[in-house]
Image (cartoon, rainbow, N blue to C red; front, side, top):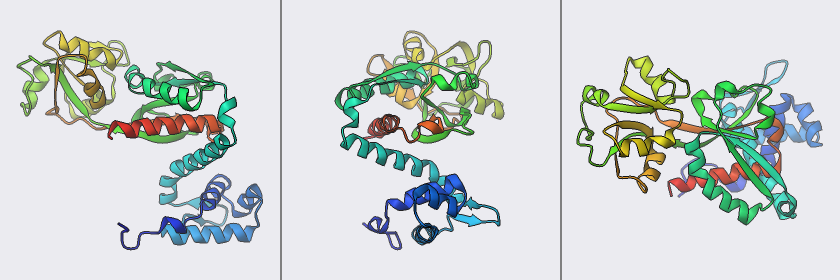
Length: 309
């Protein structure tokens, strides 16, 4: 059903996205026109059309340059990815996939690797047989100028990603759950927060001798401290540990769902505040228009959407 006042997508020319991207990069209508080999009047007309369709100024001249509005800042990561995907589509239609031979290095956590690797390998075999993958573990605080050239894509929580100067796109959102052995009578739904915190917890930490994780950083601010009896460097080991002991663990919901196929576990919503986990892809600007890289990002987005299908 079409919502009242909703723009009809048939009115939206895909070339308008190229104009939006060019002005975003150049911050100047004349320079954008040169980059697209169009007249300045044509680019100005396209900008006016964008403003009409989006009900927003899109870019505003301050006397020196065209500054993006808040809406444009919000939309540009998706716009850039759409343009890259369109180029990849045309590239594949002209047989580019048949000649693509690339080895991508993807830096992420072991549990994200477990979630995506099988589906991604299937897509590679069907669509990009010349592509191979190296998944490696790395912490965002280890991102340096010497490391970045060796990594083609990061998949990390949005709040720990140092993304200045890099491209980002949302991949999926997850909610944390608490898991324990199915016969662990101490772990029950709607238990009191103090009782929950007093259970024997095992958890993930990226730093030895400290509690350093997405969820723990939130708890520190609230003054919440679970009774940690052990910490591990990866979430993927936690289901096997709690299934064989009286311990419990906070893990991402998708990991818990997958682990329940292999271990006798139960999961409850934690009775203490735990922020949702938003996972993003991060990559270098030089790779944004690379059609094989764009295919990789699109394949990951498709797989993430299938999680909730």
